[in-house]
Length: 148
Image (cartoon, rainbow, N blue to C red; front, side, top):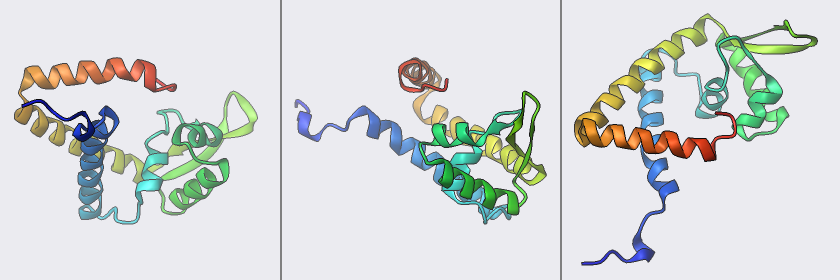
């Protein structure tokens, strides 16, 4: 039986479903660990903070939100102790957003949950198929992620 092209899911949606499942699982684990005050919108900003900090304008651009929205989310994250603002050593006029102690704890838990989910998916798909999926998605990132 031939698949009807009208019923076939596009690749974007097929990538979205597991991404949504990962995010849902991650936020459930965060809430269970006492980090129940971080929202998905805040998490999407926080996930883009580099190891040495990132400028607010870059966070906004990468998260596809306005600078005002990013600033509001960073303000919330800062009040909750997840991030801090520090002077940018390369430009005295600029500030960087960095992870604070509470944010570092969230990142550590997130990495643990991500590894657990990936292990489950690899067990389900098999190592070969999971490796092929990773390779294909890494190749797609080359043409879809301007920040890679």
